[in-house]
Image (cartoon, rainbow, N blue to C red; front, side, top):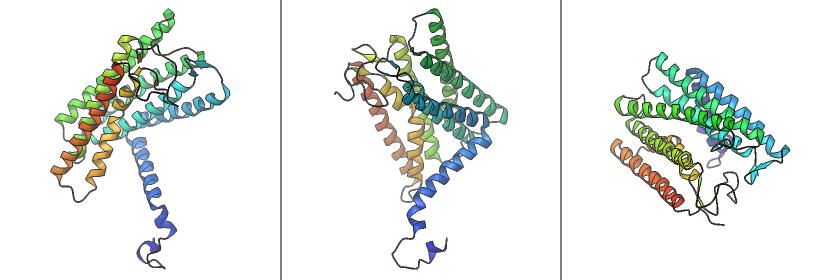
Length: 291
């Protein structure tokens, strides 16, 4: 725009300058979604379907007053719709950075998309019934659904292992610091999945108290006992947080390649330490915030 280079009033930002950061952010998101839609269409459309269903769950919060373990029955499906949508878009974008053949990329995309969609369907179905989806062994039918969810999660853990191996052995279509961040991100996601396995093994997410009771708004993390969902949450989102940090660092011209790698490593270690701390805290039966 002309106003960028020849402003009419010196040192007075134009309206275009004021909105430029927002426009840049919107353009980045639009470009990311367009790339996923083109390169990983099955992930894009499954993510879109889950996101739309998430809006339905949000509506359910206002029109359905049923509760389960102290919270609205639609809260868990809503949370999972957000988390799974973000994960599918993330995988859909990151997989374009791997030197995979079209066949291999398509296979991974389909496995990831359909397994997570099936898991989400179970969560929504059980929520609509007003019963637990996780750790529910009240009836043989509920036990089968819970078992199937575990199978779907296990399939995705195997794809994570594949990503870890391939990120370590292949040259990705990105900078060294970003590739290193992706590898560290996948490792932390794997740990987050292991925390999920801990919850399954004890058939609950709380420690020191039964599941339910007072919790933080929206996330419902316990404020009266230990809650393994916190470490699980931050672990699973390491694949977004660490690469985004690396991307930000790579834009800093004052950072050499070596310093970028050091900065990413230090940030990842701090992030991992945070996850380790909240995991340890939860295992001791201590709430992240006591109210």
